[in-house]
Image (cartoon, rainbow, N blue to C red; front, top):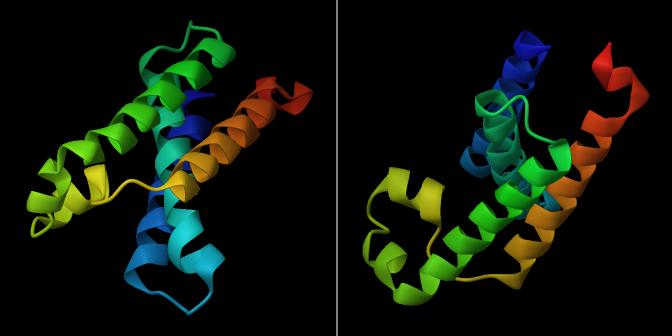
Length: 121
């Protein structure tokens, strides 16, 4: 199970990076997929670090983490750090309701997958 989650995390991170690095002119690919991958990666990382916690609790923590990062943008610091590629990946630069919607969709979807009967196999 742990190996499968690590592999899924690697795939999610790769897709998120790939979609931002090589845009194709499709909003869902160029923008939304990266935000979805960000939230899914947060959830999967928590799942790997805290495997005995309830998936619902981990989903809540992942959403709160993503919300905190999104609200941190109001400080203006991420905008000041925009020259750093790592800062842009971790924090982004400006607040977006779209990002929050993508985070919620991603976490809900991955939680549903985690709770599915086939996930425990």
